[in-house]
Image (tube, rainbow, N blue to C red; front, side):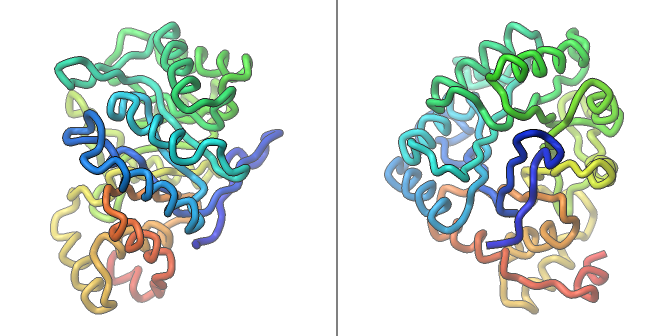
Length: 290
């Protein structure tokens, strides 16, 4: 397993995790909705990930709906002492399978209570607030609600997701930011979200490095930079690995604050992803990738 990373190192309760986590979203049914097609395999994947050294799981109560949280609890509760479960709030699934974003304090509280119930926890170790673009609720009000839930003991550490550089700077003025979760990968460093809003993750990463904040990249294989994947594919061919494996290795070499969370619904693919931690990239390799 890859080297470790510490979340909230200056807090009273830092969390040290291995630098290759697991994103649970793909354990749901098609369209991130409903139960997995192969529920026994989904449970096996969670068991195998933890058995192979993964001690950081990323989930959300709107995955499924509630599916990944319930799978995690069924597979792993009572949880290993070193396991960190990270969830996010700020979204809810509707009966038509659409995702509705929210940011009101009372809505965030309901979501936290739901996560606590489905994960069978008294306190969630790390929660990301998924920023709602162009929302009616002021960002400071939403973050204030998150910190209030932290003071109540329902949340141990507060992080943010889908943030722009300006929003991260604003969050840092409001309280301690334990981690950031944005879309980021070798070919995706400027992200467009709802309403063509740019999170500019390539600029968020240096801010995380400056402040010692772990950056958790999701959807890292989404294409964005023109011709980028041509180089990734060529170097993967030379090293005898898959493009997905090389992308994970690139993330691990790109910055010590990056904590990749590749997800999968295949046990074989899980093994491939975890093997990416052993891929060594030289300075020449990184220069070639650019």
